[in-house]
Image 1 (spheres, rainbow, N blue to C red):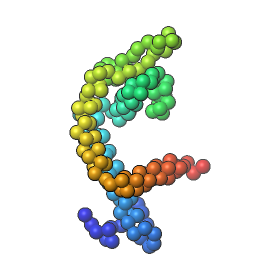
Image 2: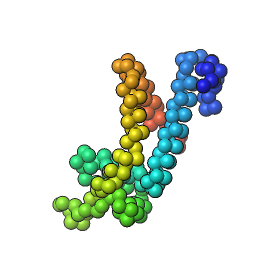
Image 3: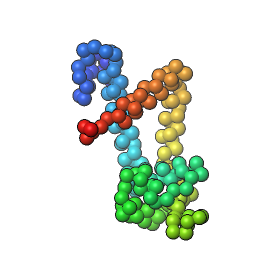
Image 4: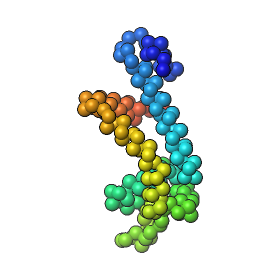
Length: 168
C-alpha cells in the first residue's frame, strides 16, 4: 500500500490542509465499496439473480424475520419500481422458487409476498462465510475504535443522503 503522504485521491483535491488522512480514509472507503460491489456481483451470479431480485429477496427476508407482511405495492415502492416491473419481478422470483404469493388474511384482493425456506437457506449458505468474516473484523475493534467507525459511517451516510444530484 502506498504510504499516506504519497497517495492522492483521484476524486479528491490535493492535501493542502485539514485532516492528514482524510483522503486516505475516503480512498479506503471507495476501495471497500468496489470490493463489496464485486462480492455482490459474485453472489448474484452464484444465485443466478439480478441486482433488483437480490435486493427484493433481502427485503422480504428482513420483513419475514420482523414478522411484517409485504405486498407487491410496498415492495415496488421500496425498490423504486413500476407496477409492471414489479409484476415481472414477482413472476420471475416465484418461478425460480425464491418467493411465494399468499392471499392477504383480511383483503381478498391483495397478496402477500414471502420468501421461501429454500431462498433463506440459499442466502445463508451463499453469504454466511462472508458475513462471519465481516463480524470477526467488527468484533476485533476496541470500544473506542467501534465508536469512531460508527460515528464516521453515520455522518458519511448523512452527507451522502443530503446530496441533491438535480441541483435543487
